[in-house]
Length: 291
Image (tube, rainbow, N blue to C red; front, side, top):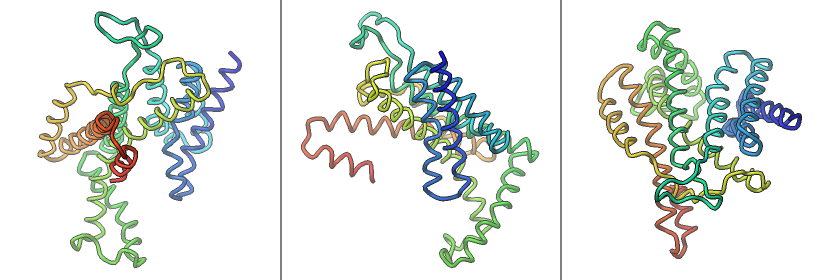
């Protein structure tokens, strides 16, 4: 029990430090922040979901102590809570029923596709929460967009004065560029959240597997990554709703972006399956990923 507690404490502090590093503002620091959920996931997969929960609590407390309760809330929303839940889901298993194919241990484990589904859900939920908080703080959606765009305009004005970007796209002003940036970055955050959590969970699984502490058999991810069919209907509805305006369009864009990233991951899984046995498979897959 003491080992689990010490592990959880260390993982939580490591996750908090990875989240805090972007304060330095460098690109390398920003890339490291992507792996903030990783220590929590490794602790959870190697020991137990309870260990992941303790690590998440330690990370949130550490972030609040080193920075402020508001960044701690963002850390909890983007890294700690999703890491805990995805770890718990990865631990779920049950006996095979009917014609289900069981693993080597005779159990049916929580499928990879459903884990990606949850990752997309967390990315969408976190982004929608940020928009909702902005709406409440500014008194409405348009006020939130206008006030935040105004705050970003100064940054773009400084950027344009450096000479590195002497012309904006299509002659847009700094204010127009700030507004476009804000309206486009929010859906991108949902897609990035899905990708970030999925990659972290895969890396955590590989690390735990290499240490021989992974309790579940390693799945054939390419074959196992199947999203629920009803996801297609939700994506179609969200894409149609983006034709609307205001907060409806933004919410639909966020949902569509998060689901699209999940389907992109499933598309890569399909490529891994259909290219098995082909010559130059590694080179073709690498080029596809780069493109």
